[in-house]
Length: 163
Image (cartoon, rainbow, N blue to C red):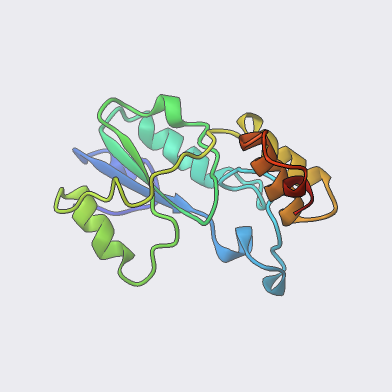
């Protein structure tokens, strides 16, 4: 087993795990100066592309890999189609103190959390019209949420749009 922060450090591995993600400063509250995200990008606020570049470089090695993403919301994955066969992406959210142990159980086949959080996330911001609408309205998240509900259930009464 080896560890490192470059694709070169994974060169001799048979299987690679890359852990990347967001921090409270990427998608936190106003108390830490972060506020809302305006993009789904993994390195969106820093515009550095460091994490995406690492994942892309590791994928280019052609070895089976798992990309573990930590965050509290959607993360754009421009490298998804370049992952080698027998690879996977795990959305770990913010796993807390026992997250490492849970991830170990998952990766070594000791547990299967597939049914724990059954929902879908958009692959890219362009595929999520509701996110665009939230960004262009000044009346906040409840407005965005009610627009989503109205699109999802168009037969709801007009009360839903003003909720």
